[in-house]
Image (cartoon, rainbow, N blue to C red):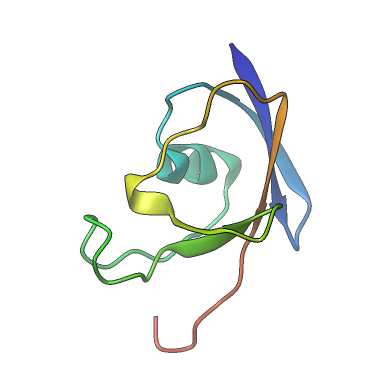
Length: 79
């Protein structure tokens, strides 16, 4: 199943497969998400989904049962 993933604030959209790692989707779309440890504990890759929940992109995959997923990126000047 294909899910359309939209990255804000740059409004970049790419199609992704359910279960595909979010960092891979972002990379394919040309969107930079900073990473530190790649295991979720440093929170460098924290992004916000459209419902306001924070997720860590390094340990999150494209979820099932959605047609579209909006990711709000924000930058932390320390990363």
